[in-house]
Image 1 (cartoon, one colour):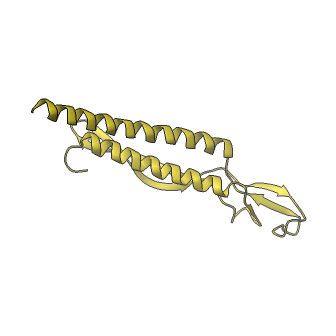
Image 2 (cartoon, one colour):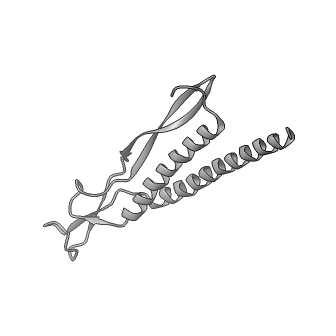
Image 3 (cartoon, helix red, strand yellow):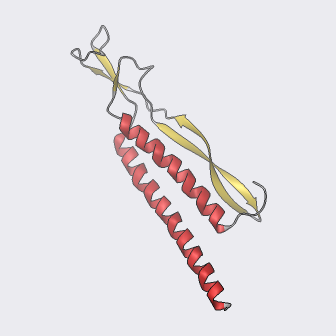
Length: 134
């Protein structure tokens, strides 16, 4: 990233990364209780991969490098009455850990809110500094 980063760049990028994290968590929860006819087509949870971005002078922020599928395998369940069941009567539930996703959602919301507070504090400090110069 060229140039120096300021507090608005750092918090803005962090908020953008947390928004991506929140969107993948919402997608995971939306698909958590879906059923599939095979393990190959079953939904697997999505996870963002973050990377540190140097801005010069030892200051860094974060970017989303990519979004990958998690290694949580779909769960096979015997349900012969399900229209998606295979010849053995098995269906596959999405590979999503709902409890972990809910915890992730709470953590993400808190981190996003922390960055909102950082921006509000920086804005207040700048306005107070400008008022002092009058």
